[in-house]
Amino acid sequence: MATKWEGNPKTACFIFPEASGHINASLALSARLAKKRGWKVQYLSNSVMKECIVSSGATFDDERDVAPELCEDRGDGRPGYFSAYERLRYDILPDSKAWEGRYVC
Image (cartoon, rainbow, N blue to C red; front, side):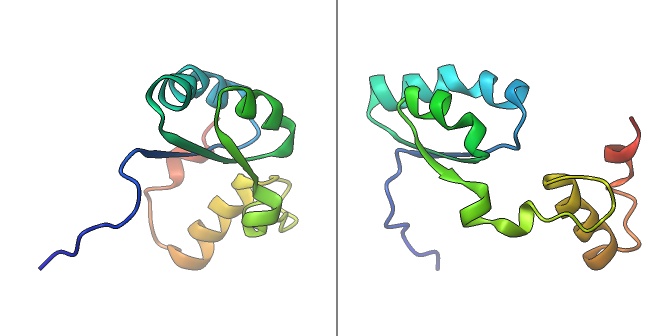
């Protein structure tokens, strides 16, 4: 039997790397939900994006404080989230082909 979720059903959470192209597309939605509809909107991102996130009416958490494992560099030359992808790829899913498309650029 499923249990009832006790949290606020009007909550949105966005998790983005330090990439304005990813975040900018969500800011209008964030402003509409937070300022016009009264939702709680929360972002996990890099501090360089804090001002634009907060101005949309959302709250902000710095990824380096909340999830430092997403920001570690394992010496593979890939900063931040790419290192997290590498850990998943090699440590958790060493035989998976699902990650290959992310590295062909």
